[in-house]
Image (tube, helix red, strand yellow):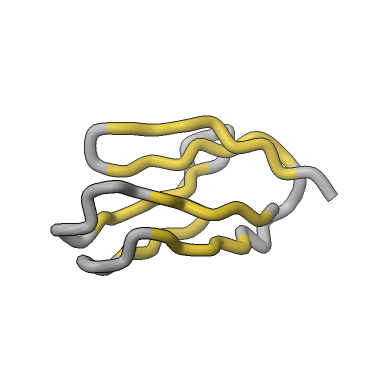
Length: 64
């Protein structure tokens, strides 16, 4: 349930949404401009989630 986001372009704020398998919003946060890496602890129940950001998304599996 923990991972690090690393980005090469930190010139703008980057908004993230974590959604569960049914598409419900579980968590959202902003990676501020000038930040090139951010540690994330999902604190979510086990399951399959989708992490969304403008222009992209990735599946995230959380296991305990």
